Image 1 (cartoon, rainbow over the protein chains, first blue to last red):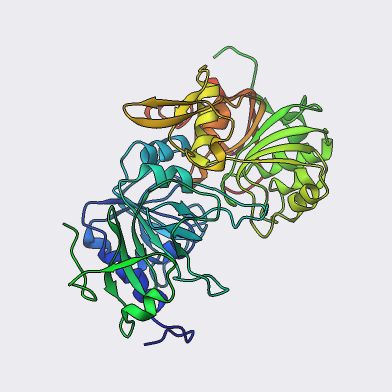
Image 2 (tube, helix red, strand yellow; image 1 turned 120 degrees about the vertical axis):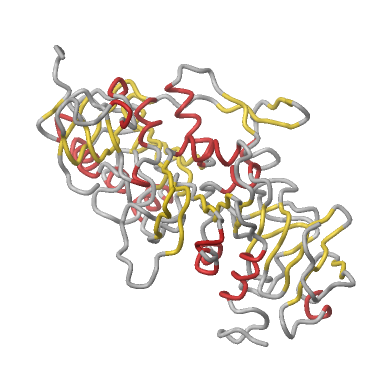
Length: 227
Length: 226
């Protein structure tokens, strides 16, 4: 199966659905800038997931079609969203107290690289280039679970899942799950474990695009529930 | 309430006294909560060698913090996300070697401002441990986890924006415009607010005040936006 852009694996929207399937009712979930902003569209607003944005908005959903945008109600990408009933607004110091203080059940972040032990590199492309950290470091160390949503390889076709990150780190050993357009991969103490493969993607295809050892469970390519 | 009025008539009066070499906190996150009128007024006065703290370094919008880079006011910037494509004035000054850049995590910037305003000497955070941010910083372990020491970030002035102000400076902010504005207001010797609307004393119920007027020194009404 190929995406709309001709590449193998899940389309971006289906990838966002894979992320949404990892989120449980009642969780408070932060979404980072980049690919993760596509997640709320794939979540039923009645499902009971409370989305948190670093800007202090707590309890939002995707803007519905034909719904008028409000310039002061925006997500991490500064795109309009809508607040749910029961939403709250806090300042940045409190928003990051929520992050570091352990109130986030999960954060979904983009990444340049993830290592086999769950190190995350997602703010600097290296080479002395100007880079933005934003909320990524606080979210990565603070959230109970870090879900990375990214393309499996970079634009040059190089694997982004590696033995050891070559780019400056965002946080050490923080990543729990990696969701790419090819697979859902859990970071476990005994190694990267493939929990689900996108339709048409085989183990060889995945291993050829991953620069770290992968374990395939007897359940792969079927989804495995979190124990 | 017998006191000297905090309300100033012009944006130039609002930013008067910001001089060469001072540290200025500039509110806003992305394109919202930005005190555009105060930024434009400051750029027109044109002090040199300012140190500023700001979440972004401009998004190419009129009245955003990019105006201060364009006017050549900034020698050093503390920021979290300087990479917006619209931050062209910042990039020109940076590439010319005229601006020193210190990129810091957003939660750390917020807390460095908060502790400065709260009279504290710094704080230990797990954010940045094992990353380039931790370079040359003291570390300490609490309950088996490593933290790094971060300093307060006090300012001479803070330029912030609010949706509503009363004459005492009690403020309300609309939705995500709140952002860094309250902690920046806390962390400066002189805090100047650009308020969209001035309401009479008592119009904001005490329980509904987002930032108490004790943190606000000057109120400029106008400039548009929320």
